[in-house]
Length: 417
Image 1 (cartoon, one colour):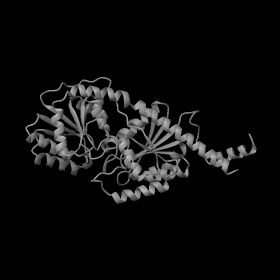
Image 2: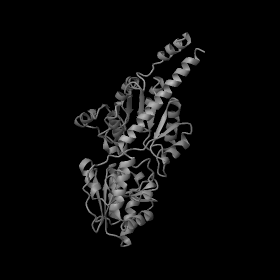
Image 3: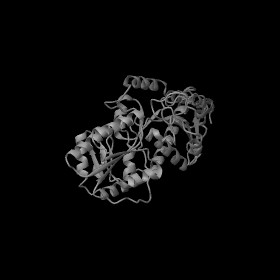
């Protein structure tokens, strides 16, 4: 080794190199997220973060999660719930006390530098939440590469709120983030919309996975078409349009149907939906079930003929994958990235206005729903397993670590040239 190379190596070591290389030991990844299992009230974000973490750990990655105990507005996870997930599936979770709003936590802020220093890669979840900017800044100061998964938060729709604030927040994120930042997005739609506002960002496309039940006990289709909605209750989800579509089907004397709505939201919005059901005189056709989890959720998918996802916008819409994995057909709005359901022959991809949704429901009533559901199930097993997604994420981690090491070495060499 020449003196120049020796000096360069010493300089590289002086700037806090990664604790170990990507090829000689397990990669250490810190997931920073405002919410985590079992805070299911927040919908797909904690589900996706948890599934990625557990399958990464199963594949050999050393995983820590830094999060808060938030469980909805004014609610916190209880000790037993946190204990059940704190050391589970090979991951180590630290729940920090939330003191304000959805995710403001001084405890998390105090722990951030130590946890980032421990990691080889920082994996940040969500966008407009308290941990985002401190995590980006800490990773830059401690020279750790960041994978940022916004979970669709960077997308817009006509009803998006606080657009000015969000635009300012994004500018701050760009200013404090390092050049090694990589955006992890889950669909072509999300990539196109995000790139328009982050034109210089490094973007990697890896879809979410889906838990695949090995056995099913589907209820045979009866004379009544059983529709289902599963997800967080929020105006973005287009539920009012689905209710209006149900009213149209009823007025047309269309197929006999029932709609089960599973999920929760703010008390005000839930009350608004109940009033809308009454106003549209759908009390006999529509039932609101509240949150369904675990075995109850599995049984709902098994007794549902068609799951309807009428969202205005979605980055992935994991409920589509869940429905297909359970053998249900789907009606997905064009606000979701699921155009392929029509090519595969397991659903319809339509506008989310009431008339388009109503037409889709009527059309679906005469289609071979059982066969469609089986085609969708085979598709999910082949292309959307969590094991496959975790493998792709590990490849991304290793790639970003290699690039980071190469840049550090180049900087060290240039400083002594």
